[in-house]
Length: 244
Ligand SMILES: NC(=O)c1ccc[n+]([C@@H]2O[C@H](COP(=O)([O-])OP(=O)(O)OC[C@H]3O[C@@H](n4cnc5c(N)ncnc54)[C@H](OP(=O)(O)O)[C@@H]3O)[C@@H](O)[C@H]2O)c1
Image 1 (cartoon, rainbow, N blue to C red):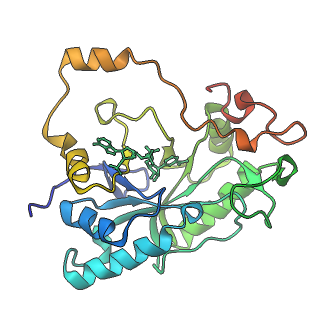
Image 2 (tube, helix red, strand yellow; image 1 turned 30 degrees about the vertical axis):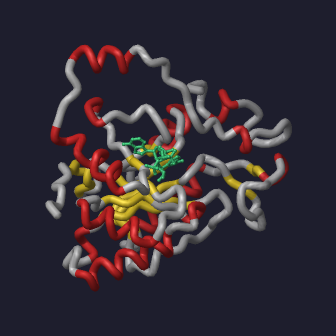
């Protein structure tokens, strides 16, 4: 099979990142990750919350064994700090390529899963959490660091306090390759996995772009679960810095 070559961008850390990522927000069948590597995906998006770090680590070992890749450096792995975590797992790897703060939210440490109550959401300290991320970078545990689901106000606060600026703000929608953003796509169907990596082989014409631009945008994942009357976020406006 022809292995697709994906264009790369250079992050502010100087590291390169393939411009399409493979999403593992849902646990993939074991063969799917090997198929993805075989097709040409080199950038994989995981998070401790997804429970997909381990299967991804296993697929990476297997792909080395099978000779689909020659060494670990050929893959770009993103993982994310979950809201309860002071420390993180590293997929059995010495480092991740990109480590993100999953949400600008802090949950009490004993919270399990997504079934938490309003009082479990406690104030999130951007400065303190980012300092820990910077330590991960300095220790070489993460080659680049960034955030996810941050609004403009929170990003500004972070930039005022950061010694190392974030490389990425990953958001769940509003990404289109032609607009200079990097999609993270999830398909466990081999044909659709191929279709999604073939976006580099063709372009939208003006009429198609205009039609897509007319589609009203909305945030699919609003994350109401982090709101509570007495917590740090009382409204979606506060969570998303007004950009709901
Ligand atoms: N940072 C964050 O907070 C955050 C939030 C959301 C998502 N993410 C990341 O982004 C990834 C993708 O998330 P998502 O919400 O966009 O995806 P999703 O809703 O989990 O899945 C996308 C759906 O589109 C289908 N699909 C994929 N390619 C297709 C194609 N070419 N034609 C028709 N259908 C297609 C897939 O079905 P088949 O599998 O059957 O093809 C799947 O049902 C996640 O896995 C995760 O890694 C991050």
